[in-house]
Amino acid sequence: MSDLTQILDRVQQGDPRAAEELLPLVYEELRKLAVAKMAREAPGQTLQATALVHEAWLRLAGDGEKRWDNRGHFFAAAAEAMRRILVERARKRARVRHGGGLEKVDWENVTIATEDSDDTVLAIHEALEKLANRSPQKAEIVKLRYFTGLEHEEIAQALGISEPTVRRHWAYARSWLMVELKEKFGT
Image (cartoon, rainbow, N blue to C red):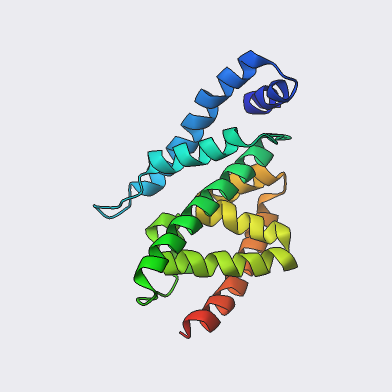
């Protein structure tokens, strides 16, 4: 059992010191991931990795129903929080622009969602909703890969499945999403 899982267990048991230990441990892991992905951002990006991590942490910590079973469950919740933040941001910006400038998604070189246009993030969000209805695990793999930038090995660890399974599900989900997005973007 990892240190994080032990701390999560202690938090759920009501240990006040565990909650104090959780933030620095989780913050650093989330921040390192976000910083690595945001380093490739173009200059002038309005969303910084630190801001994304802070917003995700506030949502996770502010949820009165915080019951994470293990490390994988926590990072899945963090991925979902980051996804929602990015989708809300994209929707807000899309309302201002009223569309236009749609871009094709390059699934061979998938990157963290903030590197893509708001329209792309929204299209992927809608497609993920459909995929989640068909195959929740495949949708979860896409969220962890696309919205948090985790690698196959990290996703396998987080979800408690084998890396070959992650690779197969990723290949399927990527193909399925390309078909969905092709219909949306008409390319």
